[in-house]
Length: 325
Image (cartoon, rainbow, N blue to C red; front, top):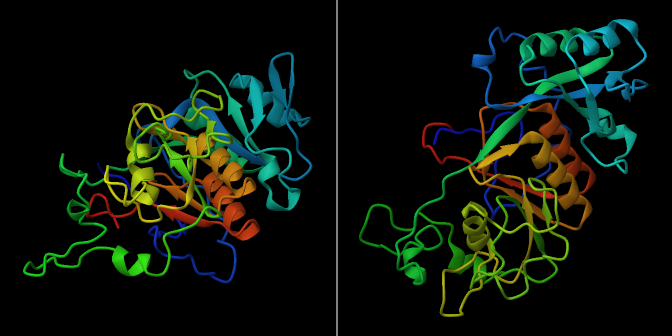
């Protein structure tokens, strides 16, 4: 699967701590400004754009049409049949982040999205406009059917001293001498959900009391695809219990946030809402084993909020396809 995660988002592994970089990431330029064909764009949700308005500009719906009170922009929104404007982030977001001014605009999937995107990007009332990009779950290393044996989890511990790839692992035995996590560590898994009935994840450490499903818009983030459960097991599967595999931080708690559908597709809208929720609900680490070809300023805003405002460590997938790092 050819996937990559661009921008200044730091790429980290679950055992590494994020170090301060001395300032926020610079404001990105719109990656769609010079695109001449929608075929050249990364995957996106049809009929939706993510837009950040300038300060003092607030869209509202009047007679099923979005208006902002500026004749030229109102005419443009009417021309393309923009019928809904929804805030992406919660109203509790402070205005100094600019996240309170990011909206999802909805219009007919048959409309010329590229022309609308170009026109909005050129309007002075708008800071940026971009598609609601899709990201995808990243393939995880397959384990043999006998994965109940920790010795087969070579990514955690690879003792093959006679081979060239000996100790190409994350040195979990050494890490476990320092910590195996604790109940005060909450790790949010933004993915396809978590199967909290799994034998290695059913001991009460999966926080089903505060989980969220952004795909089906409910409070049950049960995994219907498998990827999120695999990721959660790698992070914090119950260990030394003679079943399943071993987890890196097996005493930590997990917060399942389902943003990806059964086919593994995950919209920017759902991802950023989950990031905000995790940061606001005590997550110390956010894991996103996701990737895509897009460069979303909305996603950047959410990551900046989680890290700079809330001090959350952000973990993302990297290197799955070998040639895209």
